Image (cartoon, rainbow, N blue to C red; front, side, top):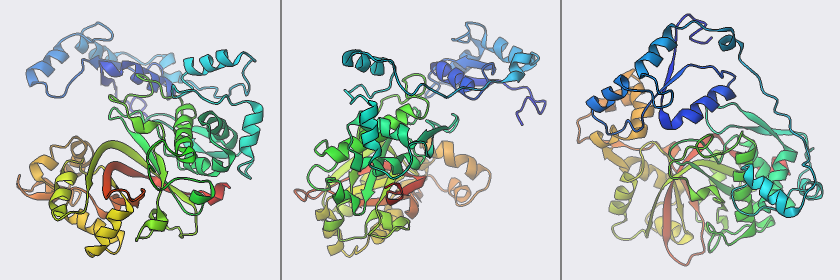
Length: 436
């Protein structure tokens, strides 16, 4: 039941830079006449007097007094249009009208169907060839995607995924991996203002079957399978969830270059530890892909050297608390950690959980902690309620063990490691074998 149906008048308040997104979201959810008012951006780092001036001033979208918008929105009766709502026809013509190759490329770009790089045009013949990479029927529903929790889900079929795989330049033998990524329900194109990007990690025999690279340059543009699988995930996330258009359905203030092809395999053969997918219920002989939503922060280093503990503490302190870290390391680094007694990923994860801390004053000042955890703390949920009462200098843990993941990849030319923000989605590890 809506608040209006419960007899509670309501008006949404946004900052003006989100006016198009707010109105598009209301439209997408079947509420085109939702009452909205807007204040200027920014609201961060502004004094109370400055913010009060927003309220006493003019709505920058309607150009009317802000409080007039609020009062009229709360007191005006709902019309028949307000109550009617709306629905959408999601059907589209399967084929475009024939045209020259240049004109079709231009059409795809003008309609935001590309990532602004050249694509392979998805002709009927090419899509049919791509579909030979799976035993599943073209009309089978693979899953659903949306760019944010407040947008509606779009269903995607095997054929629609295959179309985007063709556009990305992928080969038919890659399709089961791409289908598994699509089935995860994890979008590579979130509309968050903080510039999310998707990261995919492939495990199991399929890595070698399709020629993925887990050695030198594993995370770079040096392997056809790595690059086009990641690009296909991004393209299908853009085209099969209702778009990824800046200032409408994409609001990442800086953007993120990982949104091109951040997918790579784990170097299981050179790792001294169990592969990532075994942590989530799969056997080593299974093929699976794990999807992470994040990529907003990156830390890097070498070692472990003599002072590695101090280094790690500093590096993790520079990450965002409760925004899960994905630690990616060269096999050299993994073996050096085993020499230090960390004969499993779990032991190193436990050390990170214990030693990655922040003083309470910094912890509670973090944007994400304030947004996601402080409400829980105020309502009495533990351990947040106790941590909220901590002295300013008391060290608080930044992550839980289950939020920390480690992947071994790379070509052993240097003992390098990187830490990415990588929050594993709820359905984040998906069988690839199920999509063969």
